[in-house]
Every structure is written in structure tokens, then in C-alpha cells.
Amino acid sequence: MFEWGTRARGFDPVSALARRMSSELRAYLGESEVLARRSGDPGRVIRTRGEIHRVVPLYREMLVGRPCDLQASCWLGLILMLAERTGEARDAFSCVVERAPNSADARMVRRLERYLPHR
Image 1 (tube, rainbow, N blue to C red):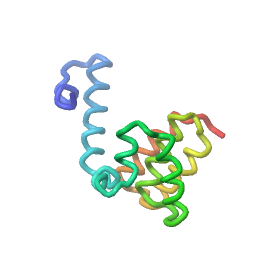
Image 2 (tube, rainbow, N blue to C red):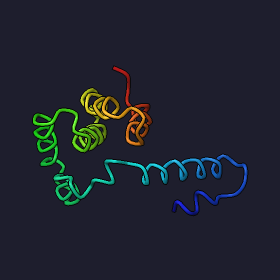
Image 3 (tube, rainbow, N blue to C red):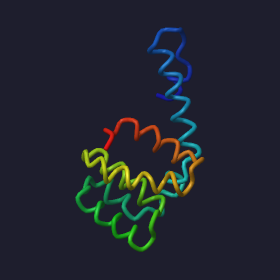
Image 4 (cartoon, rainbow, N blue to C red):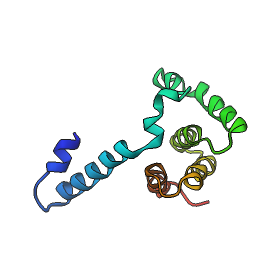
């Protein structure tokens, strides 16, 4: 999919958007600290089984012991965003940006926050 997107030809809006988004997502996948450390994420197995109701308390508990833990903050923010709990999602995402403001994960979080309604 990324290969197609980066090779899309033409100046039409779909081709231009495909090239841009594929390039940005490919860069994120290569630079993300959250994704690079996914084997150390205790919530990963739970998430892949679709047991989201069990992973939210796990990430919250991790954040009690390690405030602004990158893995827990990022994944919790994503899950809360999808659950339309936007205030809580923003709080979780803010830790990602504060911890490493110039990181690939912080850039991705800032892009995702554009889709959250303002408080």
C-alpha cells in the first residue's frame, strides 16, 4: 500500500494525497519509539485480542507508577480518542508531546489532535 502511495503519479488530488500520506506514514513507522518498543508493551497482546475494556485499566495503572510513560500515554490516548473521550485523550496525548516534543510520536499525536473537538 505504501509503495503504491509513494509511486502514485499525476497531479490530481487523490494522487497527491496518496503520495504525501504514504511518505509521512512510512517515516512515522520507521521513527516511532512507541512502535519500536512494541514488544515491551504489556497491553499489546490484550489489544490484539480485542479486549480493549481490559487494556484501558492496565495503561492507567502503568501511568500511576510511571507518569507520562510513552507507551501507556500514546496507546491510552488512541483508545480514548476512538471511544470519543476527547478530554481524557488530550490529557494522555499531552504526555507524549511533553516527553519528546520533536519525536515522530509527538508529531503523530499533534496530527491526531486536529481531529479532536476543542474543549
